[in-house]
Image (cartoon, rainbow, N blue to C red; front, top):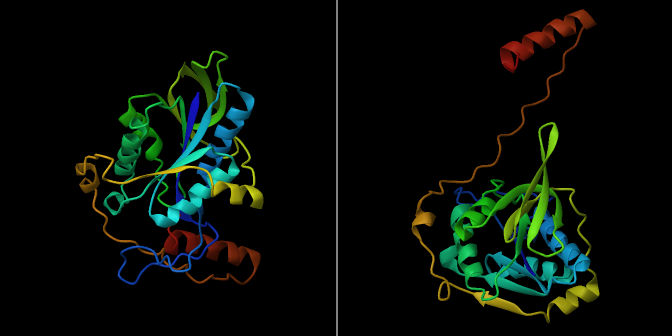
Length: 263
């Protein structure tokens, strides 16, 4: 059994994001970039599955991004992934997650041995659309289970049982491998890559792929148009209501109804 973990490098959620003056994107100068937190769950699930099962022969981490994205790949390798794949080509740069999924699918199809389990985060914290996992499964022609909170693989390595939360209940899904799973927060607790493992990660094999090796339909990239990025509007100043309790209550209701328009 081989497991693939799809990862992405994103801005740190604690970093201050600045939009470029022309609205063409965010200012990455000095911006701290990290392995997406939800993708960390996917890497950890892959590693725990390998530790539980003797039939898992390899855990591979794959990322699509520029040169700097190799840093995120190194973290996945330091966590315990056996090897990596870095898809790096300016032709593949896009905010379109469907196009990104098509590029990833093409790279996966080129792997001669194939993968039995493909995992990634429920969504990435930068684009926040959650389209990569479902689209990837569609391009590969295999099942997909979203926002997975539990996973058991059959003893024979051919079937799986996945669990996911739905409103007021838990949904249990069974199927046959291969499958794409997007992982929900809290399913596993990602391990911390130690300094020795970070050093060892430099020696692990990483396969580089470009547009010279991957034939991708560019029409998907052109299907969406990136217009601009804008910061959220500034928060209005806090307004204090003064007076007696009864007067304050009346004034608060008026403000909520006439100014905030929420009642």
